[in-house]
Length: 211
Ligand code: B1M
Image (cartoon, rainbow, N blue to C red; front, side, top):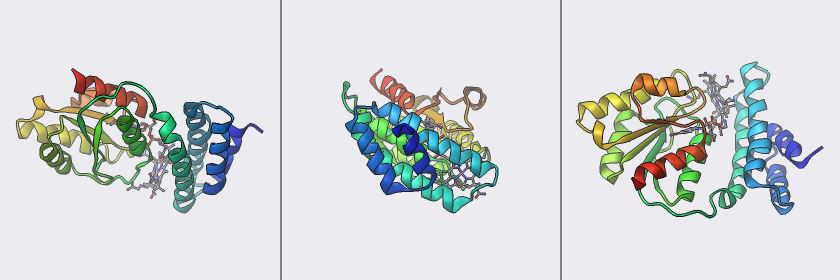
């Protein structure tokens, strides 16, 4: 069995300590950090997602797997974000109201910080009002919203409606992402940028803030 396979399987079993050791071993063997993330950790999380959907496992097992995912990601962080020219600028980031999923949002944060951006992380369950208040308070020009549930995506639309109401629409760039979000959805709510993954989100934020 390949080491990436072992990482995936141990993540599925929620063995955080073993996942951490295997990720370190893979790094020491010279495997690229992006490959370890995609083919090891995210592969395992994908299997967990399918089993969760089919009611083969439940919330506690998913949470334990999520902890193993975070343990592995921590080790990859310095490698994933190393190098490159550092940009400047502030982004207000959060997972939308009613939504507690934060693994993808944390990856977005990691990638953005790696590019030198200052990220004001509002955490999870963030209302449209809070996104906007935080952007105003911190003088941030980018609001980045993550959503993992079809039932919570609507909060992104609210962010845009509130910005319009407050006369701030033209001064803020709204970025959206998360598993159920698509570019068609972005277009339908009038947000500025949709990206499918965390690395592209960071690249787009840098473009906006260096324009
Ligand atoms: Co939840 N969950 N969950 N869950 N969970 C999903 C999302 C689900 C698809 C599972 C399934 O049924 N197959 C399903 C949603 C169905 C739907 O709405 N279409 C679901 C459900 C139903 C639920 C509950 C309602 C279950 C219940 O209680 N009955 C409940 C809701 C709780 C709540 O939020 N109010 C719930 C709870 C949980 C846990 C707490 C147990 C746990 C979250 C732990 C945590 O985040 N700390 C959990 C998990 C882990 C998942 C799955 C298995 C994995 C999500 C994940 O972290 N993936 C997920 C199944 C799946 O997605 N396959 C599932 C890895 C992560 C890196 O990917 O976040 O997509 P992701 O991020 C990607 C991109 O989307 C993108 O970048 C990342 C890749 O680089 N991205 C952005 C993300 N945000 C971005 C923002 C951007 C740009 C890109 O710009 C701003």
